[in-house]
Image (cartoon, rainbow, N blue to C red; front, side, top):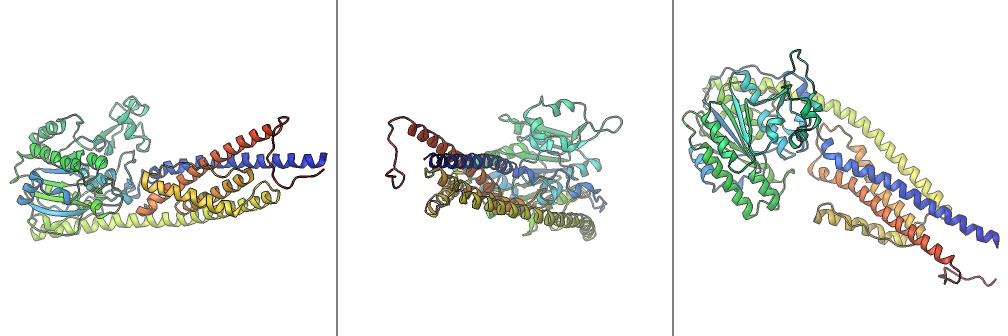
Length: 547
C-alpha cells in the first residue's frame, strides 16, 4: 500500500515538473520570437549600403541649363487614377506632359523619397521601410545642386524629409562628434531633449537643403511654400502629406480621400500659381498610391502607379511609358544643367527634355558610365551577401533540425515516463483549431488573437503545449534560418508579411501555452487540495480497488 501510494506521488511530481518546464521554455521562446517579429522590419534597414562606400560618379555631361528653377512636388500617397479631376494638376497636364510612373517595392514613403531624390531604389539604398532612422548618405539632387553653385530649399508638413538627408560637416579638426549610424532622426524629431539632440547643437551635421521648413500647422504649407516661390532658390522640393493621412485613415475608395486630394490640389495652386512656366518647370509626382481600403507597401498596381506631370521650361511634349521614380532625379538634373546624383540607378528621360541631339547623347553617355559603376557595385555587394547568406542559412537550418530532433527525443522520453501524452483525438481538435482561429484573426483583425482554453488533463495539456510550440517554432526557425539578417535584399510582399506573422505566431502560441498550463496547474493544485480534505468526494478515474 505504501509503495502504491508513493508511485502516484512521484508521477504527479514528474507531470507538474514537465508542465513547469514547458511553461518556461514556451515563455522564453515566445519572448524571443515576439521580439524578433517586432524588430523584423527595422532589421531590413541597412545604414551603410555598398553605394555609400564608393565616390559618386559626377562627370559633367556639359549640357545646357533648360530651366531657371525647378519645383519638384511630391504628393504623398496620391494614387494615379485619383489624380485626375483636380483643377490645378489638370491645368498642368494641359500645359505640359501627363504620364504615369512606377514606384518601387517596398512602396513606403521614406524608401521612395530616397528613390525620387537620389535615383536609388529601396533595396540598394538600404532604406526599405518607414522605420529607417539614420541619415541617408547617398548622393542626392541637393548635393549636386550645391556642387553646381545652385541653392535648394524644401517645405514640408512631414518633418522627416530634411533630417533624412543630414550631412556630416565636422568641427574645426574635421571630427564628427556623432557617427551617422548613431543618429536617430525620429528620436531627435520626437524628443528635442534627447541625448543625441543635446550632443549635436554645434553644426556637426547640416541638412542637404539651404533652407528647410517644417510647417505642421494649418496654412503653414501655403505660407512657407509661397515664401520659397518668391525667393531665389533654383531647386525647391515641396512635400505635402494630407492625402496619405486620409488614405491610411479611410482608404482610397472614400470621400475623405477624395476631399484630401482636392485640399492638396488647392494648396499647390495657391503656392505655385505665380510660377513663370516660360522660364521655370514644375514636376509633380507621388511616392506611392493607396489601396481602396487604405495602405501601401506591396506591389498592387494601385499602389505602384503614381502620377508624373511635367510642365514649363525645358519640357518636351512627348509621351513615354516606362518612367520610374528613380528616373526623376537625373531628369531634374538635366533641366538644371548639372550632373545626375552620382549613386543613382535611374536614367535621364531624354525624350522629355529639350536637348539638341549632341547634348542628348552626352546625357545618355554620362548615364551609361554612371550605371556601369553603380550597377557593378550593387551586383558585387549582392553576390557577397548571397554567399554569406547561404553559409549562414545552412548553419541555421542545421541548428533548427538539431533542435527539433532533440525536442522529439525528449518528447519520447517524457511519453515513456507518462508525463506527456499525445492524444491524437485531442490534438486533432485543439491544434488545428488554434492555428485556424489565429490566422483568421490575422486576416480580419490585423494580427490580433484570442488565446483559447484547451482540454483539462495536465498530461494532455503538456502534449498540446509541446505540439503547439513545435508546430509554430519550427516554421519560425526555418524562416529565421532561410532569411538571416542583415538583409541585402527584401523578401517578396507575401513573405514580408509572413515572416513577422509566423514569428508572432510563436509568441501567441507561447502565450496560449502559458495560459493553458497556468490554468491546468491551478486546477490541478485545487483538485489535489480538495482530495486531501477529509470527507471530500473524489472523482472516479477508472476501475476501483476492492481491497
